[in-house]
Image (tube, rainbow, N blue to C red; front, side):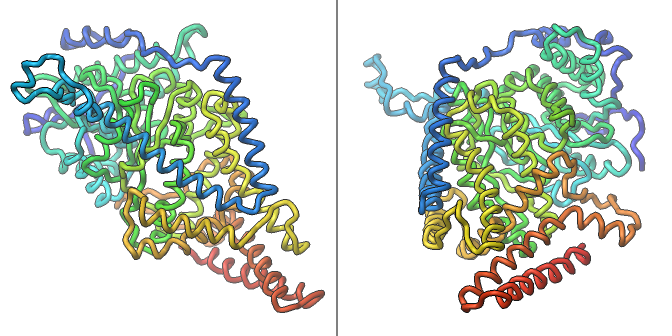
Length: 629
């Protein structure tokens, strides 16, 4: 049955559903039903925490550090015969330091590091066995609780059910918020799952106008001198009013602990904005300082939220963090097996690199946590992000991280906290995902150069290695294909072998996600699976940097595609993965030239060998491209 415009509270005394439309003018709220609303609104105007200011001297030192980092990386890239060995060794060292520093911060926030260090001056306590102070006795665990906010749109019902159930046993989750980007009949399935998993202490709200549309209208009408924080505070007040009007209480005998919000379908960025606004309202009503955000296909473990929030709380300059990612559908296809090992190797080492000094460049959508007060001033500009006049919609997680880093905040990667997410099951979907991520990297690396003055020089070094190496490899491959040499990039099989060996040993012995022997055995194939197409992915993503596409399809049982044209689908596939087919032909040509050289062929014989290798690669992968699902 379709969802009515308004439903009274359910038969269950602690499960509610309501619908809400904003007043004609968002600036003139209606009379609230409860006097408590006036007290809540006073909190909207409270002064935010003092912003972190990076002094001019600090920026100057960071600038000098960036210049030194550029010189060091240029030497390694152009002159060193041990680029991969040094890079991998440094990555492993920084990964270890990252884990050590995170654990130190976590213990600081919980008081664990003081249990046997602080002694009482009251000798009478010694007679009672209390000579050592128990730091945790004064520790308010509630202050380290968080709001867990999940957003989704027509998710696979089985996956969504597992994702919500995982929060039932998550330590530190004080309030559960689910925001669904859609309120039509097809979206009812996700609401039903929410009610199934949380049958009590829960409520459902359906809003007719997304909060971001209200915020944008106020932004168009506001004077230039008015700060964005005032508009966000008004949206938060409207969220509180909505709760009050629908008799949904967060405190008292009939308080709820789980809330599901639905809105007209927009996109992920739009529903995330709604999630942030409602989270700010809940934060003010319940006094919760931290926010965990995730996707509808991601599963948390018992200690994921607690360990992440405790680490953030140990560093006053830290505004957020993300966790390590595991793959919960790793056994589904060959692509998922390879993708799982890529996450174990490449993601872990690359994220730990700059995060060792609190400069993680991306809080991934499935596993991002925030100090909630740091978000208020950035939400509107985050949503309105434009690059060369183009409104950005698909790099929402990385851009929000960028905005926090620009202010001088620290963002950490918590390698010992784990979130399980889903990876694409087909090569086409995997490539589209990698291209989308690479576009975000390009935009955030080039559009905000001042970020490198607000963060340690290691952050700039990480950006250099991420942006330059693929393009140098691309140029070297074409140079070898046409000339048989690579004058500007030295490549040593021995150097790359050391890299693989170090990575294999570290993965098995020290990676917080302990892989099985079967997973470990996929390390070399996964390295090729990830690194061979990477130069083409980087180049193609730069050429198509403003393309707006997620590369994934909705998976709800009612999300059925209509009839399609074979010719239209083929053109779409060529536009999506044609670059990969072309690149693999080039790689085939390089292998053909290398083999012909080993066989002592030259002249036209070598040319024929190269052309045959290119042709075989193009024909084989071209057939895959036009016949793939």
